[in-house]
Length: 339
Image 1 (cartoon, rainbow, N blue to C red):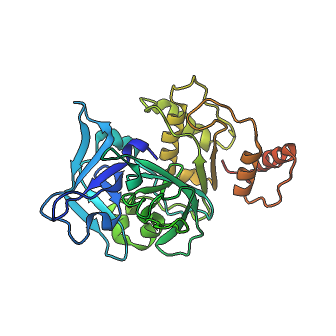
Image 2: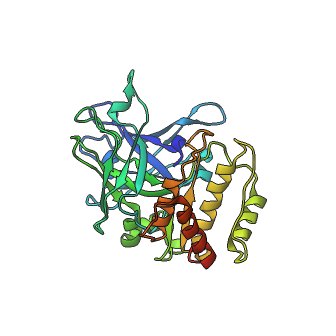
Image 3: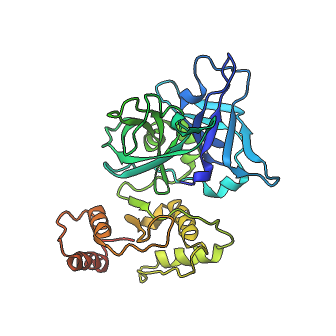
């Protein structure tokens, strides 16, 4: 998830004033949000809906904004909408992964939006929220536990429409917020819509893409977020892909000083091979041993081994770290680990 792409969605009320919701661009001309953010009783349909990106500025230094030319919605039962508008050019190379794969139960998720609890001196600021996915019940909605509490009954109002990410993959859109501490967030699942709502997959252009193989397992949520833009790394991207698809190569090392763009290169490369269904690989796992946003190295490998071995379906995990490493090494040599 790219924090600077989190947008404020601003419809106008008939009696004056504007409401605030959250949105996120998913194509070069579509912003994803919740339906009720833009279609509600009391909205003034004669005033165009505005979208603002508070962290993006155009070439003149002005705040990036856009006007919605069309609302694409899929019925009241699906609380999701696509807003057709001009997306800032700076966002074109940072659009999210969309997939048919459902999130795994208890996998971590994160989101950002503009709830009331972020209001400071009359301005709604972004607020982050984290948690874990509930098990899916094969419907278009999923429950999300949260590690963050609303500090007032309507505290999360305004975060509706916010994207729900795990790593680089956009899995859902927040559609209902908790009003009590014991309640969960509710979100609309993007994979379900892609698989069961042809009008949605057609609108976002997913129908033109290849379906991901059912056996594919992806977990890249523990990779760092890029802090620098990727500029002219076509050759490096091709080298990574060439190594990745070579059956005789099992290791590629990216070496550079801090801040050069290793994370940005990895992020862009993952986007490219995702479009090719990871070239037939069955497992794609990402991990960083560095604390997010710092250069502090984590020396404890316990969490890594527990995560990766569980991801690979290994249920009996020994306590000894050396034995865990041996199991992973043996698996790679035996080629049951495909990436």
